Length: 147
Ligand code: FES
Image 1: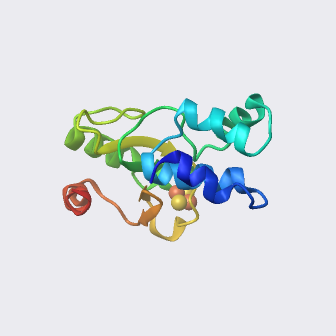
Image 2: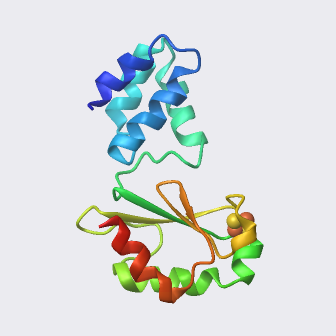
């Protein structure tokens, strides 16, 4: 679905801008500048306010990134449980470093704070779906699910 259609769908909904941004990001993996500008028009807000919404929440990205967004929890419990080894395994497997995306546009690597799954540290999420008790040995299998 094009971002214009998504904006039109949420135009009359209270709090629709955030919902529309979620839907656009689900479709495109990020919020393009032109979508943010158009959202301001659709919701009758200043462009600066639409940018404010798009950049305030850490789950939104205003930069293009890979389709499958892998987020690694870097809060203390996951850190202690070996998140750094999981990061190293992901970077090695994907050939990219944290904060970047693969050239084929399939994966992006980001850090996140606690995602509320501390019973299974270390934790990663892929497009919001949590994977618990992750170890370097499990990375290949987890990534294969996404391809
Ligand atoms: S500390 Fe990592 S999920 Fe809570």
